[in-house]
Length: 118
Image (cartoon, rainbow, N blue to C red; front, side, top):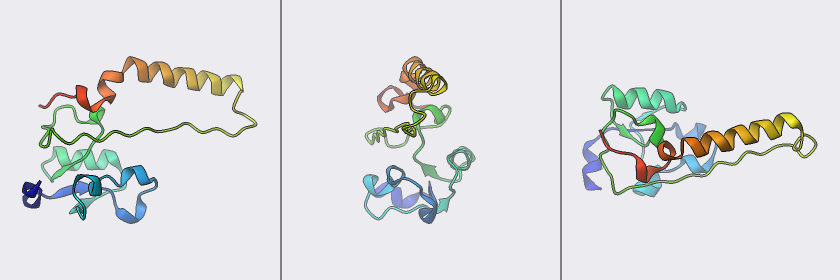
């Protein structure tokens, strides 16, 4: 963990974090702050891939990158919320079913323990 001091950290712009689940740097090491920040996870991935620093990415976005701290695994769950009046409409049932199927089919790519370095 002390080795993190020698790296530029890539992460979110603190004032633009829209969900508490994205405040994960303190879970890795309290007080850890990004040197380079973006509100876009795509931009963060591009910065990391270009050698601009190290950061936390979802497993499915880390393909082709080297994992530097394999003992740190962060897991998040996201919820789909709908308005009560439209919750049981055919279009939302279809979207929910599609999302469940997609997540089940790609579960290996979504889980930290299944991600391989390199």
